[in-house]
Length: 201
Image 1 (cartoon, rainbow, N blue to C red):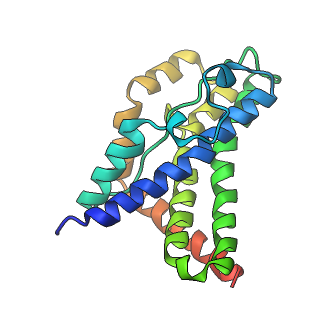
Image 2 (cartoon, helix red, strand yellow):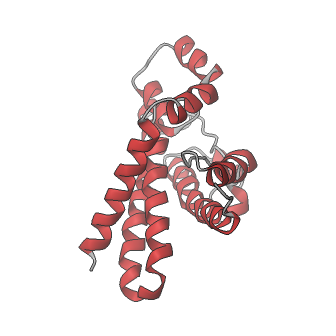
C-alpha cells in the first residue's frame, strides 16, 4: 500500500493540536488543587511546544499513519506531586481524568464548529474522531497513561505499579497491535464522532 504522506502529516498535526488541551487540562487541574509543579515547569499553557513528546506525539503517530497501523500516541506527561494535591491520591485521579474529559469536550466543540464552518466538516470530523480516540486510549490502565493513575487512587501496591511501569510501552504495543482493542477503540471513536456530528446537524 503506497504511503500517504500528506494524510499522515495531517493526522500528526491534528493529534499534536489535540494533545495541547489534554495536557493543559492536567496541568490546570493540578494547579487548582494546590500543586504548583506544572506551573513551575511551564505546563499551565496552551503553547503546543510545551506539551510535545517527540516520540509519542510525532514519530509513532506518523509511522502508524504511514504504515497503516492502529493510530496512537501521547503528549509529554505532566508531572504532579500527590503530596501537594488537595485530596491526595483522589486529587491525582481528578488530574488524570481531566485530560480525557477535555478531549471529549473538544470533540463536542468540533462538532458544533461544523455548523459554522461546513466547508471544513471533513477535517473537523477527523479531529473529533482522533480526540475521542485519544480520550479512550489514555484511559487504559497502563503506565504512563492517565488510566494508570486511577490504579494509584485505587491504592494498588506500589510494587505492582512499578512493575507495570517497567513494561508499560511493551504492554501498549501488545494491546494495540496483537489484540482487537485498538480496532474496537477506533470503531467506538468513529461512532461517537458520527453521533456528535449528527446531533449538531
